[in-house]
Image (tube, protein in one colour):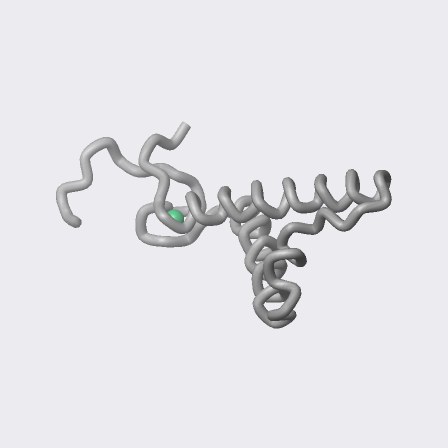
Length: 87
Ligand SMILES: [Zn+2]
């Protein structure tokens, strides 16, 4: 596996985890008749921000599926050579 994950992959993973946890809480909240959508709870006064977070979570999921295309991740995989002289 990749040891040197690029920033975008780290952020993507974090956002997917946040989205997954939030979704789990929503499900649990519905079963217990409570509103545990914590993204909504935090950002309810800023619907646009809330929407952007959902969008970012979705984009992150896509990024994790298709792989990152940044300089550190050629071909979408984390095929970073052990020693990268430049940068
Ligand atoms: Zn990358």
